[in-house]
Image 1 (tube, helix red, strand yellow):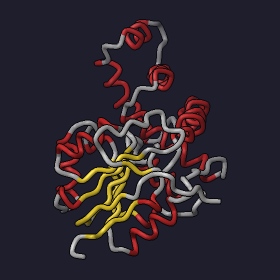
Image 2 (cartoon, one colour):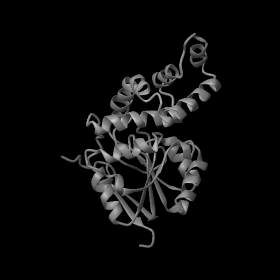
Image 3 (tube, helix red, strand yellow):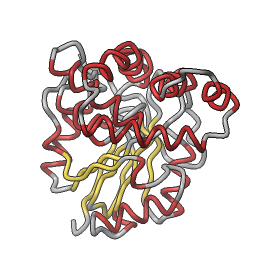
Image 4 (tube, helix red, strand yellow):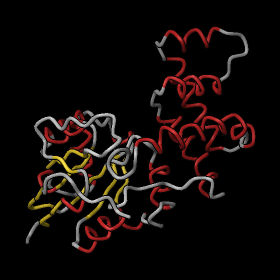
Length: 253
């Protein structure tokens, strides 16, 4: 049964593109923190051993090795000084510290491919999200994702969800290779890549700092205040807790 909306009705005008965060916006934060990350951590060593000669995996390990060499974190430096320490150990440390490294995100995505394919993983979207994605698509809006998780991880999540395969609803996918989510220039770059006017892009996220950065880049912004989110303070932004309450007027209507 769908959760009834309890927040205010929000209307956004002149929108052509919709840019969505994932965690706390379309999917519970708990799924990533309590399911995806632990699964990837548990499978990491065995996956790297099984794919020790895979060119893609080797390239990502080289990227992680280079990051390790430049990492000023005391724990990373201490680990590097230990005899026999491997880049595998560094990746495990990053997972334990909940630090975001693009190469690690890519490796996690590869591991999740296996989990989704085996049916071990299935993403629990908020109840109102599948219907909203279809509604927005029918309105002619161009949908895009911007998440700290890799593009592959994003596509897996929407391709194996409780609402079925929803990946076709999206036309663009952006991760941290497009820039940090708290930097206005990242959103300006995304607008250019989508060939969209910034003011016609609506960005929805549960992170206040991301909302501020997007607004500074000229995007329209709505804060996602979902039950279970670690942060519910929307600052000066309008907020929604259910997309049944979000009315989007497409550009030209």
